[in-house]
Image (tube, rainbow over all chains, first blue to last red; front, side, top):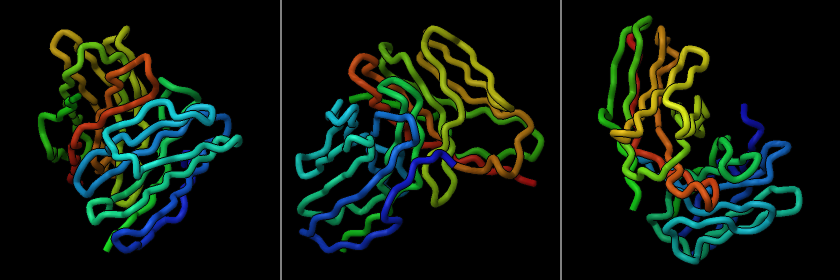
Length: 112
Length: 114
């Protein structure tokens, strides 16, 4: 176990709704990265938070947003859900940028 | 955009044999690479990493080789066990100065035959 936890485990939403996913980083880690993993694909980088600031973003639209809190836990928010947003959402924590990342178990989001 | 690809999408090996999983990367500026193992229904599990100032790194039953000349990465698993069956990803950090932004390949599915 990595010590990285995510909630909820599974979620079903309707197209157009909004969703918030949560991640608790491993103790001692100040960096959280979020990834989207479609079925049969590798994880795709969404964005990273380092010391409560966004520290890089992948090719995702602005309706994907995030937060990092003083305890380094993090949220991923997705507005105006689309069917293609159905995926496994993974967060990974690390001791800092450019350190090895440790992943949580993921949140399976289904958009109907 | 960045490209991280794997030569073989599936690999089957006999229990006890050695496994080799290959990965090509496209950005010669990438300086940090990680191999992950992902079992069904779980998040990726860190296996081993390597930085570009090295060409080989060994862990417990695993070895990663980095050939910067041809931009190739490989993961060797010694004495493969049924518990090694999973999808293996190589991940590349193509922007070493802007944070931990890793790009993953599609993955290789390893099946160990008892």
